[in-house]
Length: 444
Image: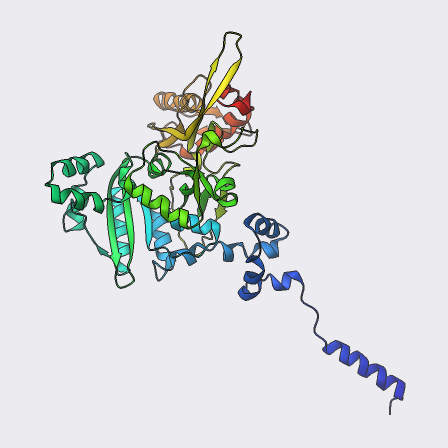
């Protein structure tokens, strides 16, 4: 029989071993314990949340749970992966309130989903996916009853306005009220609505004239709705003002009645529109600078999980898109001193850049002065085109100066090289944005 002291010591050790270890922050913030981390994160602002996610890989694993794109798509699709695969296969872009809600983690109810494409073939394939989910095509008054006939006979915004002007008085109101506010965009060809009852939800597939993103950047009335996502990544172009200050700058001088209604809807959600001219004096890190690129350091980008999604061979490189922001006018007095005048609205300006060696057109900053990105890109692609005429292989120095690439003269598309061209141009040819001195006070 063991001594009494030994038995007592063994009993104490046994009791201690039975005590549960106190949970750590890593245990609480576990991706499998949604009730725990959601209660904590409900008390954090977005910047604090992101700082928390950046502390370690374990905590970062709940990023996909918080910014879960499938959660936002599930009200529209029983299996969101089916739609995201359609996005990958057809280079679709989703924008509107669903994209904004992804970044804000807010829980307002969305009844519509805005899907953008510039391809009729992609439109048809996406329509097939949508119809298999139980949606039915609901034609507007200017469209045919069948989807196929409506796609063939797409009507431009100009034709819709002519229809309104030439219609009988009682019919004008019907045409006007049926028009979605996105129709005001000059790049919109037509909108195809698919509705699902009794859920009372609908999906609008928007057919654009040029690159889909062009209609968003040039057609949206404010910066706070310039958010969108592709099959694998989400972009918020003005996160500081949109997320932290819950405000946006007006980007159009004229606002239609439909846009007024949209502005009131977002105002009820806590967003306001401010005039740029009354806002602030520019600072060096201000995102409202003359030259911007989708996915740059001023963009909030979220990588979306792509498990079980077949990666497309060629996807539209939206992160090669650049645009120009105009917010000031300037002049010099007799002594040569420059003065700046802020404009009430911001203007986002870009142009479509096409080249035989690019499979997809690009959106390029409209500033076309000497030394601009457009000029540099044109010169690089001209070298490729000249090489094609020679019809033999030659060495072409890589813009990053890291390697020499053998480029086949018979190879047609060089879209993947544009990213390297841009990084070289931005780092070495525009180190302090000296090309835009005189346009923005922060560069003086």
